[in-house]
Length: 283
Ligand code: SF4
Ligand code: SF4
Image: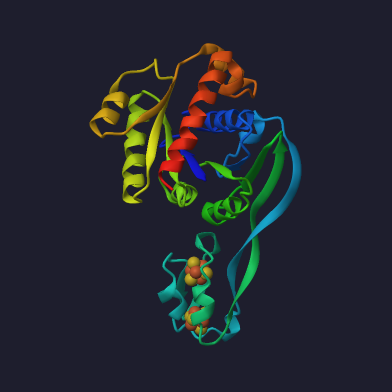
């Protein structure tokens, strides 16, 4: 069972909600792999007491070119969907930072002058946090290609329930992170920005034909436009988490919503079981 926790924008409390759901499920004796796919800024580990159990480099294949054999035929540039290759003065020029590691250019080169070589783009760490198995991808600073790392983090899910903490936004990293999930939980906040970015996320998920629900964080602050939008779009709000200055103080000390207040703990336990049963409906 795979549940993705996403948000149209950053700062909605997505990671605190992901960690809180994982802790609530763990306290109900469910085995969880929490996959931190927010690889540009992974911070789920900061909200858990965890012990590192493994760390490895993550490499992608990028093309390297033997210019002495390049004839400038342009076949490599033609096949590259990502415009990573240009032909300049009858020689190929590769822009590796744009490369998606599809391997196409090396296959089509008639002179066999393109080879694939390993390039480090990040790291993958695994932790034990009680019975929660946490996997974290960290993209190296300056690297742009998050999707291959996200796919690798997702492959390491080992427990019956995988909870994915997705990157914010609606671009390739978010699409890669939510892909294949039984359903998506969109965490938003009742503000104009929260509504604007949630509508983009809703459009993206509908195009992907994915099932989703909404959690409104700090639900009693802001205005009612998110609620009205969800009603008009027939989107179920599965949790409403109230605003709390104590929760904000706790978060600043690395304490997730689940541990911030006893009433939050009860609320998450109750709703995490509802969330699991909903995932079963989509199987
Ligand atoms: S491996 Fe694929 S994405 Fe990368 S340069 Fe070659 S064709 Fe383009
Ligand atoms: S396909 Fe090979 S020979 Fe042709 S331009 Fe590209 S690298 Fe050069």
